[in-house]
Image 1 (cartoon, rainbow, N blue to C red):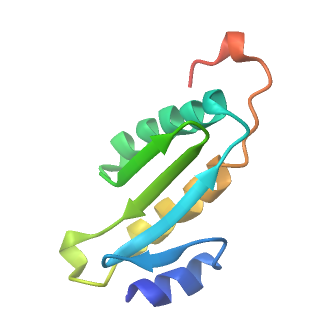
Image 2: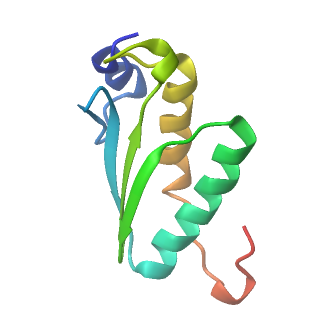
Length: 102
């Protein structure tokens, strides 16, 4: 599917099309929250074999998801599901930093 069709399927929620992939900037309360998001994100990506691009500066995480197998400007259902998972994951609030382990 085209990246624009994927954004529609995700439901928007801040996702856009950039450089032939899906892009979103996530913002968190502070560095600990953004770091926890990245840690959980990394675990999930390892499990599903996805290797997105991201950058982190203090409380923000920029994510770009592409699918080389789907062709330029296209992504598969797998990338759509990853985007939905990231949206869900970004709403998880950690309340006890002493017990953060995943």
